[in-house]
Amino acid sequence: MTQDICFMTAADMAAQLRKGELSARDIMQAHLARIEQVNPALNAIVTLHAEEALQAALAADEAQARGETLGPLHGLPVAHKDLILTKGMRTTFGSKVHEHFIPPRSALMVERQQQAGAISIGKTNTPEFGAGSQTFNAVFGATRNPYDLTKTCGGSSGGSAVALAAGMVPLADGTDMGGSLRCPANFCNVVGLRPSVGRVPTVPAQNAWGNLSVSGPMARTVEDVALYLSVLAGPDARDPLSIEEDGAVFRAPLAHDMKGKRIAWSRDAGGLPVDRRVTEIIDRQRAVFEQLGCIVEDATPDFRDAHDIFMALRAYGFELQLGAVMDQHPGVLKDTVVWNIEMGRKLTASQLARAEKLRTALFERMHRFMQTYDYIVMPVNQVPPFDIEQPYVTEIDGVTMDSYIDWMRSCYYITVTTHPAISVPCGFTEDGLPVGLQIVGRHRGELALLRMAYAFEQATGVGRRRPGL
Image 1 (cartoon, helix red, strand yellow):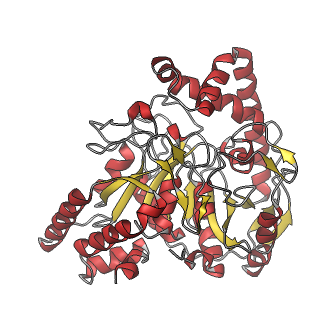
Image 2 (image 1 turned 90 degrees about the horizontal axis):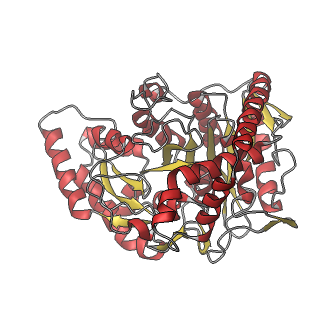
C-alpha cells in the first residue's frame, strides 16, 4: 500500500484526497515510511522534519473536515532544494559555511507551496552553492542514482530528482542556472522544467536583475509539473523581472493536437560532442514526433558565442553572490567554486559589455529561428549518468572538456537564450541508465511547451519505469 501511494501522480493523489479516499495522514505516513526505507542508500533528503510534517498532515485533514477551502496542493508532501530558504528548517547550501543555518524566513517559492496546501517534509541535497552537475558536498556527501547506486544523479537539483524517482515525495522544487533542473531529471527518469526568467519570481534575491538562474518544478509526470508550476508562477512586485501572468493558466488541459507543429531536430546542438548512447536513444524518438503529426526537420539555432556568454556571466554572478563568502571563509569552499569566483574577479568591464552585446545578438538569432519552428528537440546532457566517484566529466567522445561545467553546454546554451526548456524521459541505455530528451519552447511559451512534452510522454510511457530499489 505504501508503495502504491508513493508512486501515484500528484494530481491523482490530490483528487483522491479531495474525495476522501485518502487522507493527508495516509499520504504523509506512506512517504515517511518510504523515506525510511530507501533514503539511507540514496542520500536524497538531507534534513527531514517528520514530526512536523505529520502534525501538518493532521491539521490539513482537520481543515478539510471543517469544510475549509483547499489549495491545489492540499496535503501533498513536498521537498525543497537545500539552496532555497525554508523558515525554521536547516538550509545549508551544501556548504560547511552554513552547516547549521536555520533561516528566519522562507523564500517566496516555499511560501507559495505552503499557501497552496503543500506540506514541507524536508530539504534535498545539492552540490556546494549549486555549483556543478554532480550532487555531492562536504556536509552530507553524495546522492546516488536510484537506477544504479554506483552512478551520479546529476545536479545541482540532484536530491530533488532522486527523491521523486524513488517515491519519497510527489513534488520537489529546484533551481537551474546551467541545467540544474534539467540534468538531474534527465539522469533520474523524471521531469524537470526550466521556466522563463521571471516566471517563478525570486524573492529574496541578492541580484534582483540576475537572469541566468531560475527556480522551477520537478515531478514524475508532465501533468504534475504543470500543476506545480501553476502554484509557483505568477507576478510579485518584489521581483522586477517577474512575468505579469497568473500561474493558474498552467492548470489548463494539456492534451492538444500536435499535428503540423514544426520541430527543429538538433541531435548535437550544432556540433557538440555527444556520447553515442545518448544519440542513439534520442534518434529513436524522432519517429514519435512524426507519429504525433509534427513536421520534423534537421535544424539548429546559431549558438555562436553562447559558451563565452555563459562563462562570463556565470563568473560575474559567482563573484557577486559568493565573493564575500570566500573572503570571510578562506580555504573552506570547494576548488571549483573558488575558480569561478576568481574568474569573476578577473573580468573587465569590456569583457562584460562584450558578453551582453553577444547575448543580445544571440537572442535576436534565436527569435528569428523560432519564427520558423515551434520547438527544438535536442539532448539534455551530452553523456549518460557517470561514476559517482567522478566529480565531473572530463572527456566526451575523445574531446577534452575545458572546465568542470563544459560538458553541460547542451543545457546552458539554452540558458543564455532565456527560452523555457523541459527534460522528459525518453529511454534507457543497455545497462539501464535513464536518458531524457530536451524540448525547448518559444520565448515565455511554457504552456505550449508543456503540451508538447505531455504529448510525447503519453506516446512513449518511458517515465512509468521505476528504479528497482
